[in-house]
Every structure is written in structure tokens, then in C-alpha cells.
Image (cartoon, rainbow, N blue to C red; front, top):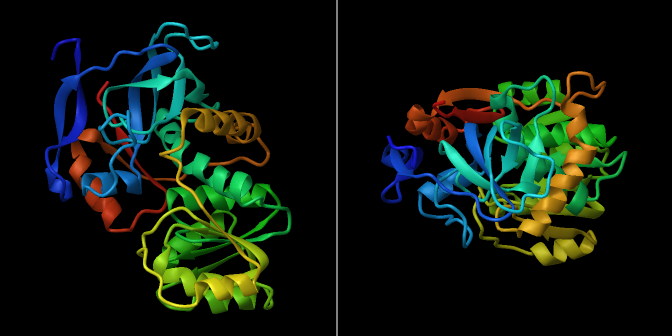
Length: 337
């Protein structure tokens, strides 16, 4: 392979995991205020699955290569880089795409240092999940100490991050998940209670736990199929933050009257499509407020939860595994060095 090229995850037509393969493509070059990252690891997100299925195109101007986060070392600095970064620095990054390749270009304002004591694979599991959880809880959900927070998909990457961040904010995290193993993992991370949505009505269980008061904040990546249970267990003046539609997008019933009766707020968000300025603000706030707590010395130490690490050559297997919904925490892909 020539030095102008690199290997990247590719698919020629939308469909199943079997369409994925590694392809030799042109290596990107950093433009003004960008760096070139030599990728060591990238993590898998639901957005990668949706994009592969043809349901979630990258935002305008973003790389069409999969991968919304990565870790690695700075290989080159583009013109007009203002920051303190230098070639060889280990970093982790949030991306609109392009992470599942040997190299990716990144605006320098989206770079984060890797906390002491973490491996590059652990670091790759932080940006998308933890920045999303931070955004949901703090910027949109305005979490307060003492709040009860219901976190759906509690054993997902975002879920495992949100449990720990809610605890750190002095809130009480409750989770839903689809197996006993997932609930046990969530409780180990700090969930006060967990409900198996396959076996019980999480809404009734939540109301029982909160002695009828309901939850102050819901982090919801499910959407349609959960709307009624969500609004039933929302406290008065509660905030319901919707960030995914894994349970469909159709609603049939009196959502608005029920929400109005609770004086509830329904807030929606996506991170991938936000502009660079917003992402830089988010990265800066997270780097200052949260990142120090990942280092081994921190008393309230935060941990990225990794389920499995695959070589990128096993990309089909990694996608199939995520689709099976068995993972607790993140699925990481390691790139050839």
C-alpha cells in the first residue's frame, strides 16, 4: 500500500454486516486548524449500524467512512493550528464520521487528552457515549442533586456513562435493560435500581421506587414504544430527553394532554449533526469538568465500560454482535498499526 493510502471500513451498498469490508482508500490531509490522527482504536455506535443500513447518512461535509469516535496519536498538524498539541501526542476525539480507518482528520478544538492510566482502546470508548451522556444530563436535562433519573438502555455505552455521571451529580440513577446480567452490571456502576422491561412494567416499578412521585428526568433512546410508560412515570415538572428512536417513531394516543397535565418538558437532541462550534463548547466543558475524574488518582473515579474488543478485520462480526443486543458497554475496534 502506498503512503498516500490507508485501510478503511467500507460498504458498497446498504444492507447487513456481510456488506462490510476493508478497502484501500486515499489518506485524508488536514486543512486549516485540523490535525491528522493515526487511529489506534475506534468504537462502534448504533449510528454506524443505521448508516450501514442506509438509514442515517453522514452530515453534509463529513466523511462517509463509519466511526464517530477514535483514539490514537497526532501524525501531522495542518496549517494555522493554534493549540498546544504536537506530533505524537495521544488523544481521543469525537467525529461526525471517518473513525474506522487508519487515519482521520479532526478540528483541533475537538481533541481531548487521554486520562492517565487508560489504554487507547479504553479511550476510544469515551468520546461519543460520554459526551452524549454529559450533554443529556447537564446541558439539556439540567440534572440536580437529589433528582431521580430514569436511564433507558442502562447497559449501553451512553447508559453506563450516564449512571456514573448521574451519581457524580448527586442524583439517583434508575435503569431499564433486557436481562438480569445487564441490570447487575448497571447496579455495580451505581444504579439505585434496575427494571427488566421484558418481565415487568418499568413505569409501575419506577413509581413504586419513587413512592408515587415519579422521576425528574428520563434519558430515552427508545422513543415510540415507550411514550406512554415514560409520561406515566414522569414527575410533575419533569424533563424527558429523547435522543434515539430504537422503539420506533409512531405515537398513537393522548401524549400531549398527559404531558401537559404533568407540566412536563419533552426535549429532543442529536449530537452528530450539531455544528463544530457547539461540539467544541461541549468538548471544552467535558474536558474541564469530567475528564479529570477518569484518572487513576480520582476518588470518584469514572470508568469507560468495554464489552468486547475486535480487530477491525472482524468488522462484520462486531456489527452482528451489536445487533444481537448482548453487549454491556462499548464494542471497540482496533486498527492495524
